[in-house]
Amino acid sequence: MPKARFRAAWWLAGLLARFAREAMCLLAATTLTGWTLTNVMLAAALALAFQSALGLNRARRSPWLDVPACLCAGVMTLVVQAALTASVPALAPHALLGASAAYAAVTCLVQAACRLATELARRRGGGRTAVIVSTGDHGRRLGDALLGHPGIRPVGFIGETYTENSPLPTLGTMAACAEILRETRAKFVIIAGDVPVSRTAVKAMGDAGCEILYAPDCDDLLLDFAPPGEHVKSFPLLPMTPPAQRRPYWRGKRVFDLVVAGVGLLAVSPVLLACALAVRVEGGPGVLFRQRRIGLDGAPFEMLKFRTLKTTDPHDSATQWTVGSNRLIGPVGSFLRKTSLDELPQLWNVLRGDMSVVGPRPERPYFVGQFSHTIEHYDLRHRVPVGITGWAQVHGLRGDTSIEERARFDNHYIDHWSPALDLKIIVRTIGCVLRLGGA
Image 1: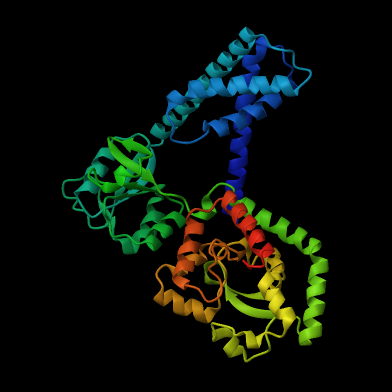
Image 2: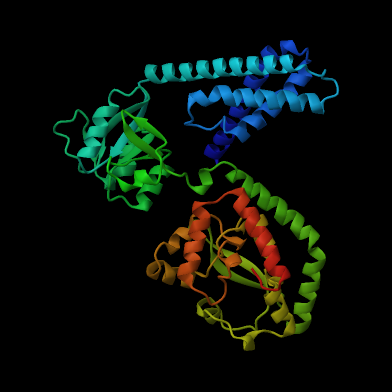
């Protein structure tokens, strides 16, 4: 939690710094327009939005894109600002172009100064430390090339690299990777070439706070499909896609869950009451069904549902895969399962933090143990919180369907997570429920 708060504070500080920079640039550039300070502040906010849309704030972009992108952002900012604010005087074409060109020039100068200050700080500090995971000559050549790099300072190798002709030492094997990263305080881990390193080991490197880079060999087929993010002494480096929890807007997922669960529980409270009364009348006492499921990082929790099945032995309930229609308590139970209304109490699980609105569906401990040993990558589903609905469910993978396909769909969701994907799943889930197809 302290690390998450620090990252959030750092992100906010960066946003405020960019806003102040844009305000300063616009203030210097709009002397031709006669705008007030309030107009400039609004224009700075618009400039940030336009720069994000144009990709101007992306890392690893070419500096030569700054001038045309800043010029476009300046023109659009000034035009929209003049259109939205009645207090802004109409701009003559020459004043508009002059202010936009001044904005682009000042912005590029400020960005160049920031890059120069960053580069000088890196050189003064000796660069950020890196360890190279390698088992061959490619890693040794990369290490030798990085010795003269001002931004990345290699400290040694992890693996069985032959280092007799290299000034860099071999720090240890993959078994001691976590301890090596802790001792060296490495900021980068560079995987050089085809190294037998597991996904679990790479995840552990990322959990240690390191940025993972892959340096393919010059004849690696991957280079024909994935353009490198940057080159270091003509060695291509590909940044690893960060895990879902480290991507932008991931913290917003929990905020979204809280809002949806809180508002949802209030909005559907009449429906919850009606379902509870119907279940009570048809099936007797015990409206809610509680069952242990496996959630984030394999932690068990108690999931809630409306009871739609006849009471059975707890062991059978935890280990029996399919459910026959003869076990339904009646028409109410059949209707609740068909419309997925029996899942509504899980909004409480979302509010508690056991689940998310969207995520892989939770499974019972007995079957998690079985599937983790028999289905490849099944256990990777637990990298994110489980959900009420998911990518597999909106593709019809629910009930007695292929577990292997479910795992593949769930891992695809995790690897490609974004707020837009969550929204897409929610919309498709609503469509499935309205068609009485469940989700």
